[in-house]
Each structure stands twice: as structure tokens, then as C-alpha cells.
Amino acid sequence: MKKLLKSKEVSFFKKNRIVTLSQLTGGAFTKLLQSLLDGSPQVIMIPAYPLLYLPQHYLMWVKKYKNRLNPNLLITLILKHHPSLISSKKMRGYNGLVNLGSNKNQYLKINKKNFIKNLKYFISQEKISLENIFISINLAYWKTKGYSLNRRQIILLHTHDIFSHEIFDKASSSVVKNIFTIRDIIPNLSRRLKILDKIDKDRYDMTDIYSSKNHHYFNILQMWFKDFYRYQNKYLKDKKNFFIKYESLKLNPSQEIKRLCKFLNIKFYKKIMLQTTFDKKKWWSDEIYNREKKNIIMDYKNIYDYEKHFNYEFFCLEALLFKKKKIFNYKNYFFKNSIFDNIKFIFFNMLPTKYEFRNFIDILKISNILMYINHCFNEAINPRKMKNYYNNAFYYAKKPNLNMIFIRFNLIRKFCFKNRNNKKIFYFICIIYFITKIAVYPLIVFETLFIYFKRVFLNYWYYLNLKTI
Image (cartoon, rainbow, N blue to C red; front, side, top):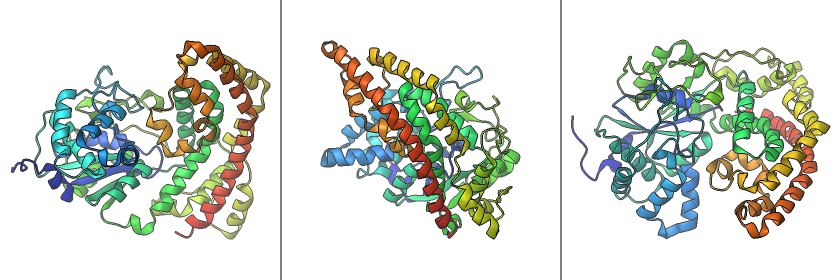
């Protein structure tokens, strides 16, 4: 098999060897699918998504540094903002890369010095651009692991969500194929909300959770609608795009992976492509997802959660997603698209969801208000324990989180965080932090109502527009 010409690797892969992997709906198993391709000598990839916010970072770097953005500075910035490239123990996400192997005690690590050397070699081959950086990082990672390059390989870029994918897609002229994962999203709604509530406890201060949870239902709907609104029917028919359903993968894993391999023009390896692994180590997902711990394609029943949602919620969601569910052959149980059903939607949509209703009741409970005050006091006297919202792209680059204005634009909190180790103004920080947090609570109550009305109008807007696509 012919080897690549030296100093021409990036140029070769740019021509016709790039494939992206993204989810078309939230919680749509991109890591699972990628883990099934692990071990194929024809697929160059970095496990999970340590480069998740690289498109957003690149735009920030270009704006900030402009002509000063050279290979050496780029490498410094990449390692600073994406340290999990070197070790999956750094800047941990929820990708299950720190509990790998049969005993769930292994993680991923590469030689930093060799990676920098390889990255500098590849990144210097072409003019600096987002696609060249993506390609260079993947080739450098692959070479650092000790693997060879050849002309039959492809590079799989795990862009993960549509927002990151769009930035890359606009900046790239080399992508020849795209893989999109999809699932029946309505049965998965309560599970997604539960996961987001768990993530909040890890990512946010306790006082900010009172605000962040207000946004979850709205953010999920907004992402669903934007995904479907962007990718219209003509896009679904484009031959360069491959769509794979979770339900189909679950029922016929061998058949679906064979279909994917045919699309990618790579060999199907039965022994390794039906097991979930990363770097040839068993992958079990992350405990936050509460899946059954099996090193195979994990089962998940597609049934509506009637305990966590009202029936009219399902009716409204089916109405909003009616056409898209039909395209992907998902069944509707409530909305049948009759004239009467369309009239009912107008009224049902104005009713609060069970998640919204519970949030509003909880925020008015005296016990929760007293608990909030207690959290305010504990955070105020322990400023060193404040979560760092300012150096992690989860907070400033993840699109849905930008809606959280009380968290995003709390300048007093930012001041307190930056001066949390300043002993001279320690008591001043404690006092203004406590007063600010107490003052925010009535605004959070208002925010709860505001997001309800915002969700109602969002649904009406997309109801009118999605039905015409």
C-alpha cells in the first residue's frame, strides 16, 4: 500500500478524506457510534470530543490575535483550552474516558512532547485555517499513538453538535461526507432533563442552579427545532449525508454498522465493530447517563414518561415535530394532524409543562427560599470554592448556556471570583456576594415566568415554520 508523500499529508486528507460526526437531536449517541468504529485501521480519529468547542475557540483567537496567530501560538492555545487531548483526566467531561478497560480504571494519555512535535510538523504544512487545524490535530494525535498513515484512511471529526458543525462546515471546503445520528427525541426528554439537572450540581454553584434549571426545557426544545429547521428536506436527501437512527442501531447493530462502513468505503470488522471501545479499551459510557453497564450497544426503551410529563405536552411535541417524525418513521400517539388537532394545539400550548409547573412551585416554597439563603451564606464565606465559569468553554461557548443571563452577566460574581484569594478585601467580597445573591432571587422568580412565555411563543413560531419545511 502506498504511503503518503512527506509534507503533503494535510493536503491529501483535505481533498476527499474528511467525514464529520454530529447529532441531529440532543442525546443522540455520537460517542457510542464513534466507539464502534474504534480499532479500525482505516479511521483516524480522536476518542469522544476533546475538540468540541474548537470552532468557537478558533473564531475567538482569530478575532483576538489576528495576524499574530502563528503555529507556535496556536499550539499553546490548543493545549491550554483542550488539555484532554493529552490526558482524558484533564478537564473531564461526561465521556466515560476515565473509567475505561475491564476494571474501569484506565484512561487515555499520549506523550505531550511528541504530540507538540507532530502537531507543529502538520500545522506548518498549510495556511492556518479551521479545517487545517482540525486535520493537523487528528494526524498529530494518530502519529503520536504510533500509528501509520496511508491513502485508504479517512479522518473522522467528531463535531458532536450542530452549532460546532455549522462553524466548521462554513469554514471548510474539504468535507465530503457527514454522519448524523438521530433518535425519537420525545421519549428521551425526561432522561435528558434528569441528566442536565445532574450536570448542574457538578458545573454550577448551588445558588445558580435555581436559575439554570429554569432554562433546560426551553433549551432542549430550541436545539431540537433549530436542528430540524436548519436541515430541511432537501438536505436530508443529499447523498453526502448519512443518517443513522438509534433505534435501528439497537435492533440491528451489525446491519447498521455494515451500512455505515459501505457509506464510508471502509472494511467492516465484525469482531471489533460490535463492541464499544476507545483506544482498544472497553468503554462503558459515563455514570451520569445511568445506562446498563454492558460493553455492547445498550438497550433503551422508547416509551413516553407519563410520570414526568402531562399528556398534552406529548400532544404539543408531536404536533411540532409531526413532519420530521414522519420522515424518520417515528410513530405519533396523540397528534394526528386533523383540523381539530391543530386547533387543540393552539390552546394546549399555552398550558405549562410539568417541568415548568414544578419549577415554579419549588421556587415559591418557603423551605427552598430558606435553603437558597443558606447556600448564599455558605458560598459567601467560602469564596475559594466558587466554580470557575470563565476558563471552561462549557460556560461561554456552549450555545444553550448563553441564554442564562443571570449567570452569564453577573459581573459582581466575576469580580468576587477574580479576587477570591485577596485577603485584604475578603470580608468585602463576602458581604457584596451575599447581598447580590439575595437580590437576584426575585429576578429568578420573574425569570421562571418569563421563560414559560418564551417557550409558548417559541412553539408557536416553530409550529408555523416547521410545518412548511
